[in-house]
Amino acid sequence: MAHQVFNWQINRKMDYWYNEARPKRQIAYIFDINKCIACQTCTLACKTTWTSGKGQDAMLWNNVETKPFGFYPTAWDVRLLDMLGAQSWGEDEYEGKTIFESAPAGERVLGFRPEDEDYSHPNLGEDEISAPINSGMHIKGLQEQWMFYLARICNHCTYPSCLASCPRGAIYKRPEDGIVLIDQKNCRGHRECIRGCPYKKTFFNDVAGVSEKCIGCYPKIESGRQPQCVTSCIGKIRMQGFINTPENARADNPMDYLVHIRKIALPLYPQFGLEPNVYYIPPLHVSRKFMHMMFGPGVDKAIEVYRTAKDDPELLAALLLFGASERTIHTFAARDGMTLGFDEKGAEVARAPIKEPVYIRPYFDEAREVYRHNTP
Ligand code: SF4
Ligand code: SF4
Image (cartoon, rainbow, N blue to C red; front, side, top):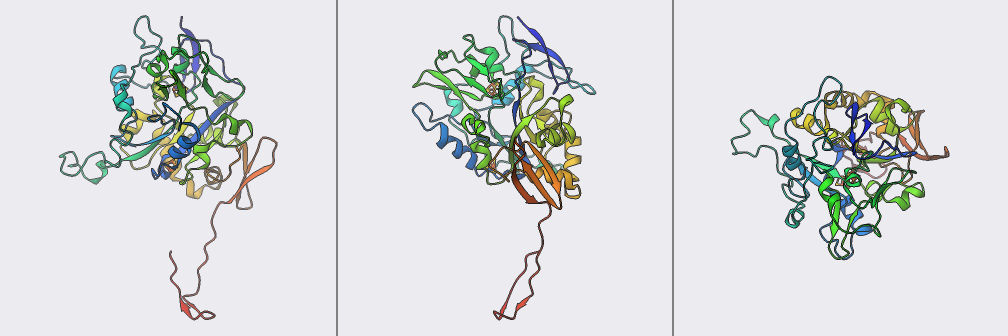
């Protein structure tokens, strides 16, 4: 039976299978799409840590796909968007239906289960731009041509549809950090979670006969460290922390600051209704229509604020914490031209200059009798 719960990302109450039960603290991530280079280091760091066993060959708890044509599994989002049909946002709330509210009679969630074949092409559409030359689609000019890299993991949703879909009650959300886990002893491999997760971030292990998913690197989280995909990121596009609800947002918490206060990081497909906890700084160069579809109505404001970052020391201080520490940063401050990050006990765990100093070396080095080139 459906319960009424509040989802701040769509700014209204909605139907959910269980009562609202927020954890004591909620794990969250921010990914800056503008910085991702699709090196797949995160994908491999996750794969070698967690999914190199039997039955896990086609399983990528972390994947990076090129939008608009990349998908893993094939068509995961466009297929569901199609099933959901045209929906709309009002002035400050979502007026359409979530996947819980659109569930067919007798089902808990609107969803579909991909075929095995759909997991066989994780590189589909890689590096393809939105309107290939000679396609006839680029007639409006270069601004119509774009692509970007979308790094994806489980969103450790506040209202997980994997959890709502499981007929065994084998999926749970940890009260201490909001990480969503599948109890392997209870799972009987019904694969309802795979049908129910709109992000397709639970996977079936056909050797073990159970479903498996991202575990948020919980052993690292428990020891105050950020997950493997975050600390291995070459582009320093990621930060993991803990997020509060908007009414409890703290200006010194980097997650709250970037999501709730500056509003430059947005959830992926908030209209699905899960209150996902991976937040994305949207890419600057991409079709706004596409961005609105993917990240909701906050896109214009997010991009406007992001463009001012270079002249905004406080915002820069928060952004420069990405990739600055292996430890989870709970609070931050800008002091004497530096950004400082602190752990839960207030100990300093990150320090970086807000503005890198510039050294201009003499063109001719007299001591070594050599000419030097300076790169501006
Ligand atoms: S992203 Fe999918 S697998 Fe992860 S918590 Fe949400 S519904 Fe569950
Ligand atoms: S490691 Fe970082 S930069 Fe490389 S693909 Fe992953 S998210 Fe992108």
